[in-house]
Length: 150
Image (cartoon, rainbow, N blue to C red; front, top):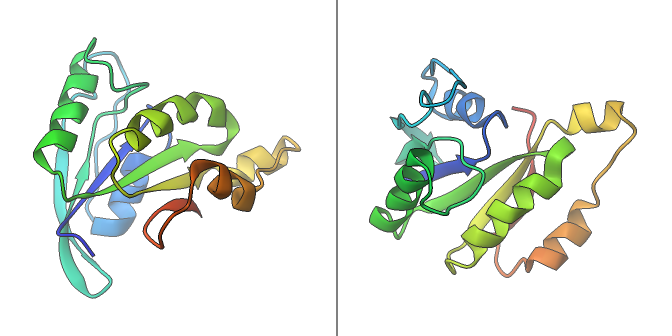
């Protein structure tokens, strides 16, 4: 288990809720332009080891055209050994996959967490997570697709 975990994802996908569940620290969530550039950090015990969990701003891509993307890219650059956990809204998987591909281009192990699967199922949708893992190139136990109830 790495010493640092970076939570990355589009706006409104449940990153802050996952952060709260991992760290037991409440995050004040606000999703208005210019308000989500804040970085939240807290300690958590993961796999019986202490780790710093960092909740990054919600981003649609890693292009440095916006403050939130610049901050997220800087977090990735300054924490090269961190575990990258992308949280995605299962209902809007296509939107999330742009960010997934940009993160994959960095060549670092990552986990894609599919959140809001219950909402997708309520709409009659489903995702073949095994096939998605194959497509994304699950190459180790630290990469691939995970489901989240967060």
